[in-house]
Amino acid sequence: MAGIWRVYTPTNIQWAATALNPDELDFIESEINKSKTKRTSGPWEPWIKAPFDFPLPIGAKYGARFTPSGSMRNALYGGFEAVTAVFETTWHFLRFRKASSPALHCRREMRRIFTVGFHETAAIDIRTLPSAEMDRILDPFDYSASQAFAWAHSTAPSIIAPSVRHESGICAAVFDIAKLETKVSYMRELSYALTEDKEAVSVRADIEDITGVCVPTQNGRMHLRMS
Image (tube, rainbow, N blue to C red; front, side, top):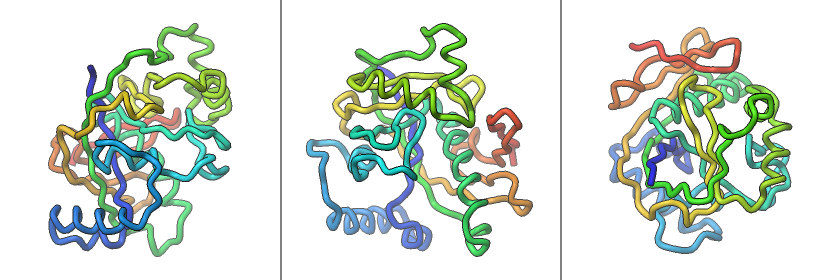
């Protein structure tokens, strides 16, 4: 059994940003979740269930590398290292925040990072494919090949692949929640904000090796400049 790291975005960013402490944030999350339609039953903690409760089919705006628009399968995405999960999520944060209202550019947003046990049984591992096919699936800017691969393997419980944003990282897309342990084994607070020049992401966390500035490269990767 492996452990995968996931960066979790609280349901209501404005409330989360003003939470006085983790206990208050937990209370806010539980109250919000009471009003949401639940599709995922079972003993998993809400942080683990959250991505599996997104509306289906997946909308045109919400397709991801292995969860194409129109799919009836959600996935929990994570990295095998904390820094991998941070690199993957800061790349998307930077892209979306730069495209948002200027009023939001300087606002710092709270996140949580946790690790959960992952059973790799029956996973499809992209690393076993011919290099040319793997390169198409891992294109840093074009998801068409990876989404076609996901459609072709629509019964796979999970897909393991090299991280596109972290040069030495490994990621997993888990479609079957039964492949995950029911409780997180580690959770910490962190936050993201655009840098003053709006070209990178400032990360604050109480985990030393992910605290600093995540800077994008031309090939779609991220690297960390320590604070």
